[in-house]
Length: 218
Image 1 (tube, rainbow, N blue to C red):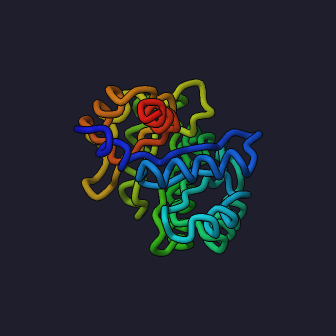
Image 2 (image 1 turned 135 degrees about the horizontal axis):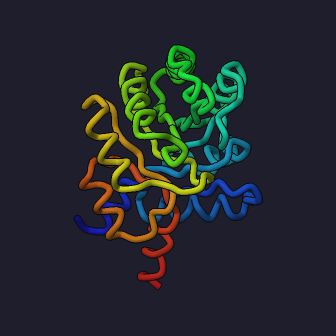
Image 3 (image 1 turned 90 degrees about the horizontal axis):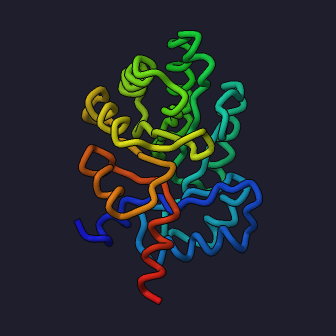
């Protein structure tokens, strides 16, 4: 797989708390230049980014981020606001405490309600694999498969660690064929990116690959 094919699967990402519009705009410009799948940015910049891009690239943003313990009503409001501002894709974080408490119906209902709000927009469900047991990861694969979400996503990038090869392979083995997988957090090389894809990842959340590509074109 060549580098352009890999970049086509990347959500070029900037979610740093101190991110400025100048930095976000730089991410958007790089994403357009390298034909990434989209750009994942903080909700506060979505409206400005959508206007700036004017349809050149999908805008992705995050909901309930990064901890996931917002109430469902707050996540629904965030989702509606993001879509009204021009977001094309929504990456939501589950309430991990509910998973630990085995409140599976609550998690499922929340995802379904946000799915309804998203309409035809893409919904990705972040489960923060580094905080879960194997049993919990498998359970979330089952819940996401039945929820109507488009993707299951490994990580926020704000947890103790990010995507692993084993987690992506586990997800592919336990999610329905209609559910895509996004690996995010700590993807630092094109070699690793290609392996994630070979294991079943359809999308990669990272900023490093575009930075590497840009260095090679200088």
